[in-house]
Image 1 (cartoon, rainbow, N blue to C red):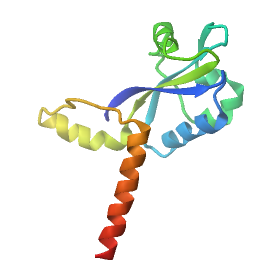
Image 2: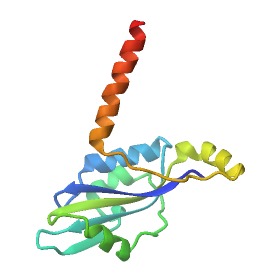
Image 3: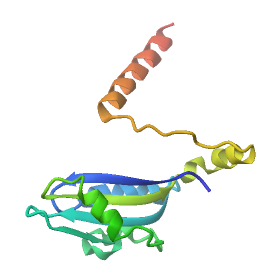
Length: 144
């Protein structure tokens, strides 16, 4: 099994867009991730918190049609914790995913008693800087 993590994707507005849900479903269809569980958390403008399963929304039916069964590991406690980080009038999509693309490497690391010793999320602005630097390095290497 590949590494498993819980991702929380936050969005403005109280409804997810079909485009965002479709992008996640496309990763699953391509075999990059396995969706173990999902939960939609909403925080209304008045601060009221709600949560529901992704498959409960009719507008996402086409996007999630091939996702398959989920384990129902994410629950009300998780929704409450995520809601604390949301602004009123917004929502989040919690995803418990297995990174299938990394399964072979994870198995090899575990076979020699290795483990992931840390994980550091990189802020989007730093990712953009790294991407620019990489493109520049590739361009410079091509000139040599």
